[in-house]
Image: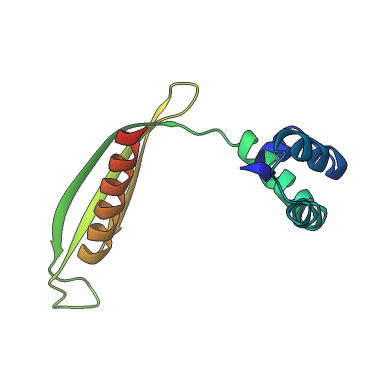
Length: 127
């Protein structure tokens, strides 16, 4: 949080350390030295990634649909018989255009995907 905020505000190393030193009076001197060192070493890459994040346009999640299927055979394999899940995400980009993104997963991949969605939902409920 400290470094991404410093990157967003284009703070120099001295500005960051001075701001932290005056804002957080209980911060030990050696902690400020570590912050200074890390910012000197990694600040440029953090600033670049922060700029990239600000430039990327993120759409709005509209809907998610899924369906279970079983591949029975193909031209090259006569006996597949494996289940899969097809997921279609409907997204609205910042201009309002609606697009669908589809992908397939194995059952275990879908279970993991579902578990992660449940975790996100529980975190969002606490916000």
